[in-house]
Length: 111
Length: 112
Image (cartoon, rainbow over all chains, first blue to last red):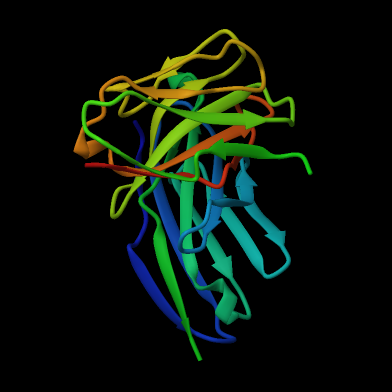
């Protein structure tokens, strides 16, 4: 499958900004997805990038550079409820459009 | 409320037993997936189906089988369970093979 790398853990203060990076390698890139997963729950869809640039959705933004195989998820005005795992996932059209996930980044928001 | 439903929610299973995890969606999504999630390893794709009547192998298919007889249902079968199959299993679906996936609530399976 794809090599999808993201940091294991990040810690930030309530009200601050955190940037979660994701790098990937794929021969048939067909979209990058970010999911949020709270402990003991199912992943929920946050954002989708298929073209280069920034997609903004409220306090969350996601950026993509296809030439660099790089994306980031930006969380602004952090709230305690943002403490969760954030998963980066990539679709590969050269591999039957399989959706592969990184191991996830656990974000802890402290007061 | 439309969505994706998995059953059972949790199960303790004796090694060597056969088990089918059920997954049903009512969103008329074409594609469905089975993932397992283990601590430190993230979500790993077991099997998938891009459309009813077709299935494919994911990253970790050994010991598992699936069928996709219709659009709504995508059961996952463990023919003879082993302790290494202890995991949380998530079923997911997407409208098409290139759109975002939506996840069921998960099945926590313990093989003893």
